[in-house]
Length: 360
Ligand SMILES: Cc1cc2nc3c(=O)[nH]c(=O)nc-3n(C[C@H](O)[C@H](O)[C@H](O)COP(=O)(O)OP(=O)(O)OC[C@H]3O[C@@H](n4cnc5c(N)ncnc54)[C@H](O)[C@@H]3O)c2cc1C
Image 1: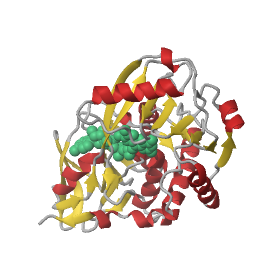
Image 2 (image 1 turned 30 degrees about the horizontal axis):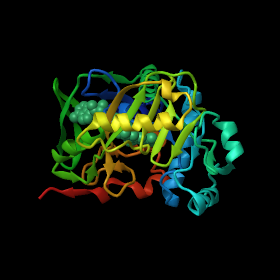
Image 3 (image 1 turned 90 degrees about the vertical axis):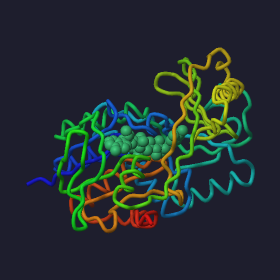
Image 4 (image 1 turned 90 degrees about the horizontal axis):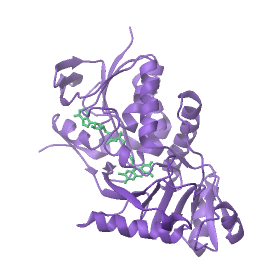
């Protein structure tokens, strides 16, 4: 009989897990508090798929696997269409930029230095062209809502049940094993439960007497009105990361994680958009449309948290920053682990125990 797995949360991590688990033959039920699968952090994300950021060798390897995972999903999930537009980075300069490129190349990352002419040829609408920038040609981005929609549709096609407006109030546990969840509609039992609830993991684990060391820094992104194509790829300039969405909007933060909204988010968004207009020729005619503020679920030591929860058989936790980049790897590796195919060595450093303490 198929293993029955409940996934709590339908952001990018829950959606990826749902597809991977359903494809592996599990009976999957996704319970999502909101009215539609979307996530909370996910739709507010800059959604850069990369291994530029996070350079500890083990973490870089996980991110490489995740980038390869997006290529696999691009092939296997109908309609997904990842935008493999490449990333152009010069928020480091001079010797620092050269060292950055050399270190990444040493890890096997597809990245190289470009001079002014090559930069201008690649991005002809830059107003101030730097002397040098790093091009990571294998980077890309997704539109987060579209990616969730495609993964959820593919998971449904593989047999998953996605139940929205379904709040998980607590986890049912007995004799050191999680047996199901209590929802607004009553108890649902399962062989295995996965918490893919982003920041909501804190409350769910709290109900089991566990404290999760998780931060939730805010990040504001400005979104312009749609524009004709002004950028070829992702831009990581000093104090300004900007990309153009599939719809043509220029989406920017002081870095990919967004700007501190401070006490006046409207002003922060207007200042950000003014920087975009100063950097990109043609953007001066494109008005600001709106801004978003998202809260990044960020394990306190800055890397991912994915694996079994100690002391509770049948319970897995998946919470991470860089969740857009990492979703295919975390979804695939945890699906293998949950269906009895062993723990992927790439996930070994990211077991949840290091971030969990018993509540006093
Ligand atoms: C401004 C910003 C920029 C970012 N930029 C990048 C980037 O460039 N690249 C990158 O890789 N990552 C980036 N990230 C991080 C990335 O977006 C997150 O790591 C990722 O979206 C987390 O996804 P998630 O599915 O874990 O969480 P979420 O998207 O928050 O989804 C969790 C879901 O669980 C549901 N839920 C919670 N509790 C319950 C409950 N009790 N019952 C039922 N449902 C529940 C919620 O309703 C929600 O739908 C950025 C994030 C932000 C905010």
